[in-house]
Length: 191
Image (cartoon, rainbow, N blue to C red; front, side, top):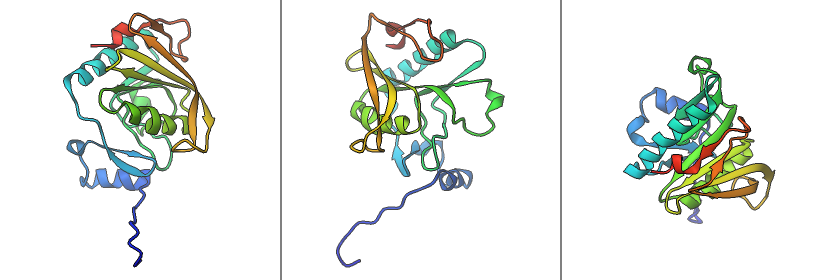
């Protein structure tokens, strides 16, 4: 190894969970596993936190019973990814998930400082996992970005991207794929 090459180590979900169980990693570390890499999550600025609470409140109303709206809890995407999206929606009740859910109906990220990260890195990761409905609440531009239709793309970071991107202004309305015909006013998601 005299060539000066930097070596990195990739992590699996099993190894990551062991680090948490052994209390080597804890909630104060604000780490999530993305594509085998441990990544520090975006800082919790107040507009970010407020938007997360607004998204949870709105989606609980729209999805209703039979669904669980999870704020900042892990989802099991694959063997090397266990992100903690700002909000995720899964079918069923909390007791249905004694392990982290993997069948996710909707993922929502609230972007303040890392919009490109949420679009490119997380977007490619969620597309690779087959998440059909991915939303970014874009706080700087006060709009909602909706990503749908995962497609393979060798140029994308994790080999996948979303084929359909829709942008909805603050005065517009969105509808989650899992509850067609429902109405989510974008203004209800924004602080």
